[in-house]
Image (cartoon, each protein chain N blue to C red):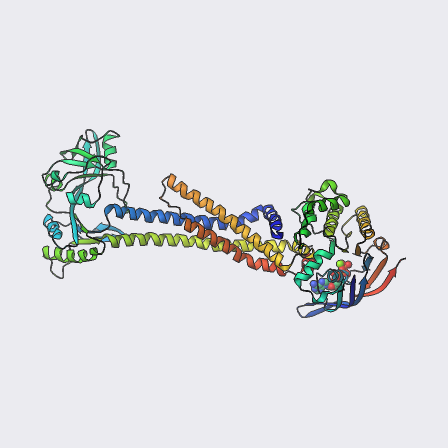
Amino acid sequence: MRYGRNLSISVGILMAHRLRTSLSVAGVVVGVAAITVVVSVGNGMKADIEDEFRAMGSELVVVRSGRFRSHGGRPHQIADVTTLTEEDAEALQGMSSDVKAVGPCVSRPMVVKNGTLSTQSTVEALSFAAVGIRNLSVSSGRLFLAGEMGVRRTVAVLGAGVAENLFEGEDPVGRLITVGRLPFRVIGVAPTLGTDINGNDQDNVVYIPLDTGMRRLFHVTYLQTIYVKGVDAASLSRIEEQAGRLLRTRHKLRPQEEDDFTLQNQVTMLEAALQTSASMTRLVGSVGAICLVVAGIGVLAVMLMSVRERRGEIGLRRAIGARQSDILLQFLSEAALLSVSGGLIGLALGALAVALANELQWARADFSVQAALLSFTVSVTVGLLFGIYPARKAARLHPAVALTSAG
Amino acid sequence: MIRLKRIEKTFRNGGVDTPVLKGIDFSLDEGEFVALMGTSGTGKSTLMNILGCLDRATAGQYEFDGRDVVALDDVELSRLRNEKIGFVFQQFHLLPRSSALTNVMLPLVYASQYPADARERAEQLLAMVGLKDRMGYLPGQLSGGQQQRVAIARALINRPRLILADEPTGNLDRQSALDILDLFSDLHRQGHAVVIVTHDQEVAARARRVLHMVDGRFEREEVRP
Ligand SMILES: Nc1ncnc2c1ncn2[C@@H]1O[C@H](COP(=O)(O)OP(=O)(O)OP(=O)(O)O)[C@@H](O)[C@H]1O
Ligand SMILES: [Mg+2]
């Protein structure tokens, strides 16, 4: 009870030194808000990556023709090669019981038109199996039927962006578009997907049947990509190894020759992507943590100043019956008050920033209760820890000296 | 009530010893009014600090109500100050951001039991010192004399039997000083024991006993009938 009464006096004193108090609290506010936001954005990023791989199906080995090199986690093709074929895809299908499905694809950038409206987009020719493996879906119309594949039909599913560009809000299903010089009938429109983790626009795409693309539009005999779906995640490394050997044999590569294809294990890719985002989160999060330590030093400085300035008050309190422990507790609670209020403001600001980031679509941020609680706890602990020294100093002040030195 | 025997106090600062009190014998009875005089630096404040249990003597004996003060620890000394002693200082020492009323009630924060009538008591005391209509004022909004009256009300809130006042009128103008002195006379009449340090003969004239200190010792004692 005696502490409760005292605390209201402390609040009054802290409020009276508004500027000083807010300066010391600012560090705590920034630290807590920063950690909350960073971890929340990190969470959002992680969820985004996971969603993306889930959409693609994560039990996947992707075979690409030519050699790719990874630049900052994104694959870049070094050379285009023409050796990956439909026969390769068939061979992969029969390779082992680990393989559940095989989906070949080839794509080209092309001009797509509807009357006078035209747009440059990626035209992706894929097999029926590839449609399933890629988890493609439509928001209106329908996907390809099994019977439409392999008979060079000119039907197309539009990405949401292409549909918007060419039809400006009208329903494209059933309408005709021109791809290159060939007319296609639109059978469906995909839902809005946004950009993938490599920054590719997933909505500026036109999907067409594989054979139509290869033989009537692109006039090619080779594939670009073969998706190989494994029976489970554990099968992927086996598939990767077997597919490598199989393709080398089929492409008649001599031992000293490099692969003319690239294998990507989605599980490994997912892990790498998650690791990248986690290390980013850790990096920025540790900046927040440093901020909190700096904030602690701010609390220390303010408390030391406060103790020096309030020697008279300390002496008086001792004279009217305060024990050393009373003084210690008073200054500790003031330090706690500083860090708790800073922490609360930081939490509120952090939550606000997270809500705003989502609302304005700056970034996906999943508010992390754990990070919020942790940073709050840390900030209060830091405040208390840095409050101990000044509080002890105050408590150990000799009452007679404190009274006279105060002037 | 108080008995000091051969009290000595030596300040030790970085190997340099400064003997200030050099054998003080002093006793104070219940309800006595004593003035302590002497030139600057003779150790009056030092003695008051020891009397008020704010500082410990280097040597000697100190009994308060029959208890050996020398043997008390910080907690017991704090309790003794809280319950039995009221302090009045030359610099008032009021909390600048708290109202007169809050300042007067401050010692109750450290009382072993917070009285139910704390507020009424404080208001009564403020009325007694003539600040009935200034209770919500901050110290900065009060004159020096008024601030010292708040400090006196604060010294009385725990109903101590001993009032220690170290130059309580040192910062005040003549008229305010006289008013404050009247207050101390009243307290004495109400039965409080009062020890007051002063340079002022007129102040001392109100006391029944006047002790003259020279160089850490009592040189002379006047007792009026
Ligand atoms: N903490 C301390 N350390 C060292 N010396 C001290 C300390 N406190 C007081 N002194 C010395 O003790 C002596 C007596 O000081 P004190 O304050 O008791 O004098 P005083 O009689 O109250 O003087 P005044 O009338 O000016 O208030 C002085 O010489 C002072 O320098
Ligand atoms: Mg003095």
